[in-house]
Each structure stands twice: as structure tokens, then as C-alpha cells.
Image 1: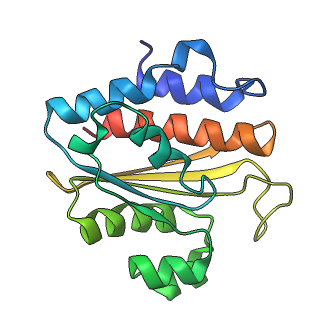
Image 2: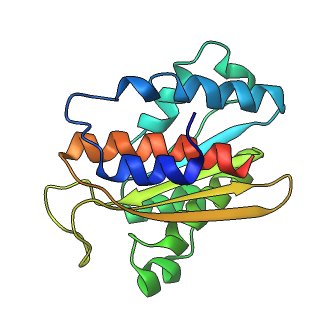
Length: 179
């Protein structure tokens, strides 16, 4: 398997129009297996991916050992209501930003007492959002066992669905990086 930085670069420009490339078909399973080995619980707060990441986690046999639930927080109000996000954070940085993705990751983990939290925010299209072009995505990851936080910015190409699939795949890569 490629190293994580190489995966990020490759996925950013790859063509996902026909679905997930075969080389990444088992990436979610590999990530869930790593979480099981390390006995870590995971959750997520998803905006542009609208639950795709959590669905991919849950599709892996035995996922219930590491995944109890999570959040789909498509609207700003729901991020505030369910996660307890500070509305000033969104006002200051916009919803499509590194600080918001990171807060989503950390707040989701803390809300559900999970070891790992992942936050997804971005623009899947068809229109830009708050001055951010289609394909702008921020993914945050939080590891509560060592209080480590990572956030990455991406500029994906492709259709709305391809951008969402790329986001999910990079979310798994980020989880592997932080654990």
C-alpha cells in the first residue's frame, strides 16, 4: 500500500467517475481492522459526505466493535445543535474551513466518548459555497488517546459523487495516519 501522503496526492487528481478504483476497494476494511487491533472506537461528523463515511465503516463485518454511531450535520444549525459547535467559529472562518472540520472531529469524538473522531466539510457541488469552489474539502481527525489533531485541505475534481467518494477515502487515510 502507498504511504498516506502519496494516497492524498493520487486521490486528489484521480478519476472516480466509475466509482472507487480497485486499488482502494479494501481500504475501509483495512482501516476498521487497524481500529480493532488497537481497540479504538471511531465516530464522525459529516457534512458534504452525508453519512457515506459512516456507512462505509458499518459495511465492514465486525464494525460494531469499533463504531457505535455518529452524526450527519449537513446544515450549520445542526452542527451547532448536535455537536455543540460554537457558531462564532463558523462566522469567523466559514463552514468550509480547517477549524470547522477539526471542531467537527473533536466534538463528535467527545460527544460519543470515541477515541477517534473524523470531521468532513466541503463543497461537493454543483455550486460554490461561501467563496469556496466546488471540490474544496477539509477533513479533520482527532485522536483522543493522545490528543492529536490533524486537518487536511483538498481540491478534488470530478462530479459531486466523485468528490464525496474521494472525501471518504481520504477520511480513511487520515484515520490510518492518526492512529
